[in-house]
Image (cartoon, rainbow, N blue to C red; front, top):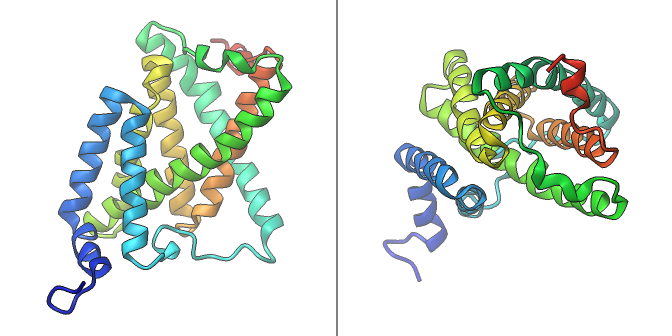
Length: 235
């Protein structure tokens, strides 16, 4: 049923694309993440999908407008280079620094079920690609970072600010890893934000970087070497 000539989808779009709505979603989702962890992320992700529906499935709005056909090899090579940056910045530099600052080690006990269990590794890796690599990038970079950057003026300074602002809730939702985990995951959020910005807001690159980076960590845990990179860094 239409109201004033506008469909339900159009009326929804007029609300969910307002700057004030975006700010409210970011603040509410961050608060929910701090209190309830993944529930806050799922709530924010649901809102992002409502925005996608209301804008008539405009995937380009979130960064999926660049086709990978014909350039998949180049994109994969680029993603691997950024994974190396993530390992250098997060695992070899930020991880030992975060543990010194907080006085506590990272808590990876939630992933103990992966150690030595190939079946669990395969199933959880598949889940990770959907929920973390795609889901988190769609929300934190495709929705939160992009909307904040546009809200702040769509300038180089606004995109820089949005990189750090979007990394905050990304770190908070990983509080189950302890405060050290919040800091290091937040640092990875900054890296992923840089990936999004420097690759012309191509979210596919972010998804690849996120998924490949996580696969390194999950594989090390499976091999019983979850702290290998930390030991390499002298942590």
